[in-house]
Amino acid sequence: MNIKNNTPILLKQLSWLVIFSIAMAYLESAVVVYLREIYYPEGFSFPLTPISNDIVMIEFWREIATIIMLAGIGILTGNSYSQRFAFFLLTFAIWDIFYYVFLYVLLGWPSSLLTWDILFLVPIPWVGPVITPIIVSLTMIILASSLIHFKRNLSLNQWLLLILGSLIVVFSWVLDYWIYSNQFSNGVWTLYSEQELFGSSEQYIPNSFNWSIFLIGVLLLLTVIVSYCIKNRNIQK
Image (tube, rainbow, N blue to C red; front, side, top):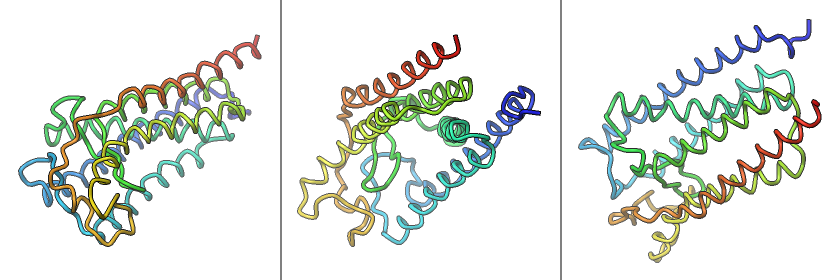
């Protein structure tokens, strides 16, 4: 029996991947609820509360552990390189979307999809409206679905475009904080800085997200998806 072509088994795999991702999202949101109770008892908002590097290192490795778990489930479940990558993208995207769903259920936050959030910490804080990671996650779901359907790897050019688009999206998230932090003599905070994270940012309130850069990155990601689907649809004819 060829497991790759067995639809019932694939549907079972996808069902459990979705369940796993939603459970991971709840776990992640619960941790954030605890952190906000400690650092933002009045509710999360900007300007940001300084965080010691000891806590930042713990948070950094927790985020890395989360990525490893999401990648691991894709590697263990998939039967080919393209399927493993697709399963990772799918679990990551569902996890990210439901993370915000559970935060809204548990805390009533965010108040809107344009609410600003801290998305990641390394190498410097990523900051952006909540809707931006959701848009990227939806794009990841489309790409994952395409990979699962066609069962073929991305070409080298498609990989290069995917990496470039991803880097541009990340750049849009770090740009505002980078510009603000460079106003201070200590420069931009990094993971190994001696200063506290957000220690020089008592007045930092983001209000200038570069949508143009972000949309260029998303457009490149969508270009990869369209070119992949067109190429593989023609092959199947």
